[in-house]
Image 1 (tube, rainbow, N blue to C red):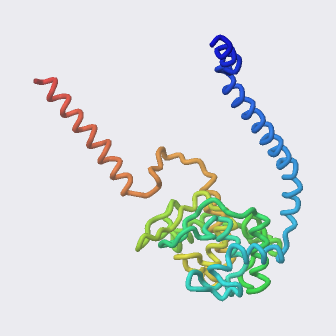
Image 2 (cartoon, rainbow, N blue to C red):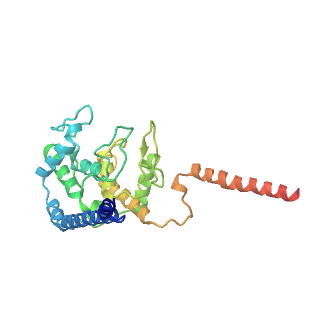
Image 3 (cartoon, one colour):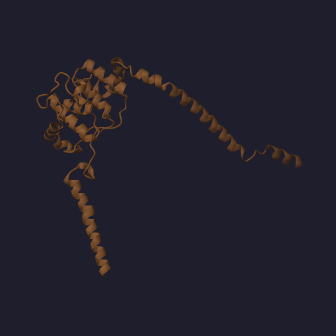
Length: 277
């Protein structure tokens, strides 16, 4: 009996053995993960350099893998997606850079979200579409940067004219303050408070989703440039009128007055009544 007890006592493990074993496993796993992460980080610069040199051929591969299911290998469209013939690289860049495409699910319209592709990949896909089915392309830099047309030094940007043109042609959907607005059947006009100058131009030229196309017969290049300049100026301008309340006009302002103004009067009435009693 004494020998049997001695054998059992010798074979019994310390209660901290399992803890030590788990700790060693965690340390080993963490070390392997840290090493792998460092190796991946060291190759990021090389991958970025390579990605910046993507061509239309690379764009074709990306299109086949990510877009052809809905738009077709020949870009003629399918029951799940429209034809891309004639949309041009400007439309493709707009849809991909704003994250509206690839579409996650069917709905009244494609919402803006984080882009799935990098900028070089987007440019490569757009270049491929342009090579197969040409359409609207990128504007000259002077159109979107607010500078003067190099061929006409007297042609200057007019913020007041741009704001007027926006009110006449765009405010009925996008709101006078460019804060967006609701449309029919669950559709909506997005806010333009953070939209880039290129995407404002692209929207006017390509007419994405519910937006009409504003050709040169509707708005000249100069008119588009004035609208862009006015919107960019508004984006960068400091609001001096207090709370904007979403810039949605009398609806939000009336609701604010009803909730807080009338609510304060009711509370004051109850307080006076309670004091008098």
